[in-house]
Image 1 (cartoon, rainbow over the protein chains, first blue to last red):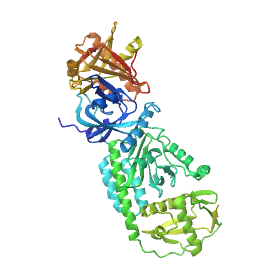
Image 2: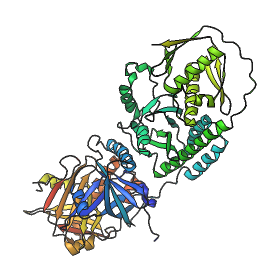
Image 3: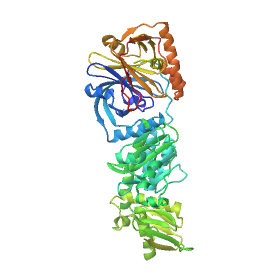
Image 4: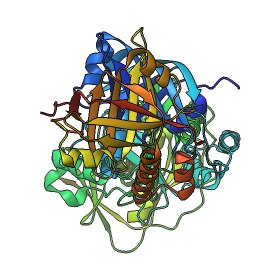
Length: 447
Length: 155
């Protein structure tokens, strides 16, 4: 029989059927206990959820050998894992991943409020053996995940703008992986919040809505820099709740109407949030969700992590080349002069919030950019701009990271398209854009 | 320690998993297919395992007589662990065979309630007719239902 590896049985390590662990005290008394979660860490390690102080814990600390039995929830195949206890982690990627997943398991099994992860007990697996017996033939996979990653990575070569890359990624996730609800959040300049730059599959795009680091599946993935996968519906990590909490703690709590609602399924059965990084820098979070439970396994997680990392590198490369190779301005067509009722644009300097008439449009860096552009237009009649001049503008609170500026412009462009068709931002080439203004402006500095 | 209600629970077709250990304190583990309580002033338990499924556990029971058995009803999470040090292997009789059938039937029903497919359940319980019994006197019983009282010894 071929040697079994931990990788080959990781579908058993997803909490669908509780695992069982046998240990032995130093004076020879065996102990057996159910484990809510046996988690795959890597090809040599598993982590067991530590929720309560127990005999198992006493035993492994004194005699660190264990025998763990797991079951494949689809095929009913059973495996014995000989394992050596190494340590307990209560922070970091494995812990956060297990904590989120356990919240789903707890909710699925009616144990919300009882199951709470205190630590991730890390074990080295020394052998994997199959228990003889009947199994059910596994259903063939619906799609090839490797082919999906290949198609995505090839597509990135044709996308020349960050907006194409972000929208293209979500479109491909639907086409290749069959996941219809997805979104991308970008990390803002403070490094404490994420804002939504692209979404797919929702009635409201939610462009510009924000999530604090550490809140909900998306915020935890960003803070812990790890993919977070939840296989069952759980209210603990749904970000509508996280969003409400985030609203409560922001300065804007007294102006709730100024918050853009987050899109999202009301009760997703499956969630997967994956950090988008370029080398070691966090750019944002790619999030997928499905109404049904158990839609994302370890293989789907690996595929989406590969897609997110490729996306991050592609975004970084685009931002590096876009300014260096900025196109020459195209011939400016004669635009019709702004006409009609004046558009009242109000600016709140404290947080660069912009209202159009009585309606909230945007705040923060994107608000500051719009305010500057509108002033340039009214003061100097300019409507053609380059990314580079904005980035070098010391009055704008932008860090020296051009993909951030690019993402802010996408946000601004999309918010205007959704909320204020009289104003628009149009790309006129790589690293250049034009401000389109259809109505006369009345700019007011609010206090 | 084992009142009538607990004895009924043990034999009612719950998930049963057992552990033993060898001379070098290495634990062994196996699922069991059912159990039966032999009443008396010192009640005994007979737990059934498939020989081909049991791995090293039967050897360890023979060598050390040590056993721990966990009983769990997935619907309610009620869990109990019994321990003994006089475990021995015994051959099956008619009453044992009937107990195995009864336990499998009841546990299958609770897996169906949890949403497992019939194929899964059939495979889960399918085995050659090679069961053997492990008989022991429970010397200790522990509450294992998840929560603050998990681990408490039953009086």
